[in-house]
Image (cartoon, rainbow, N blue to C red; front, top):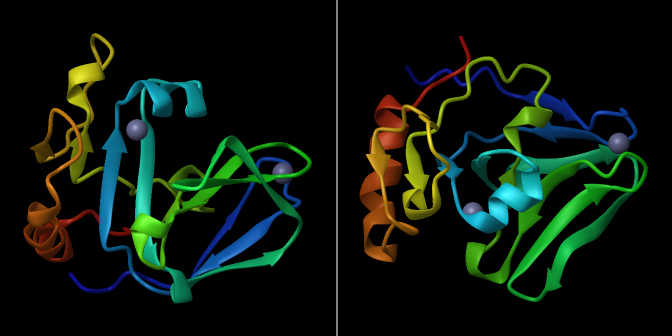
Length: 155
Ligand SMILES: [Zn+2]
Ligand SMILES: [Zn+2]
């Protein structure tokens, strides 16, 4: 259960931005917070957290959008405005990739869900671990170890 079938290709909905992922994700999360609801226009956001050196934009132009705050940079396609990935000083070189952009997202399942305190009615993600807000920082090591062992992989 260690074959991640890397590298993965990803693109925005218009195809202008093409990305490649060459390192396994450290965790798969769903976030139900009100901010993620507004960012996605959906019930929750899905995230795969990858080491920054395992992620590259191969072609196309990206720009910052959403909150324009120092604590989180949301990167978008300049043409179709798809939300592609997020970087932040607090992520320490990690990149939060939106797995919907993957050419094959059929296997993606969240291992952890956050902000269930703001979850919309009827939403079920199947995540093994649920937190009212974000997991406390001291839990991430254990959650990442669990994900490395039993998190969903490409079929
Ligand atoms: Zn959120
Ligand atoms: Zn695009």
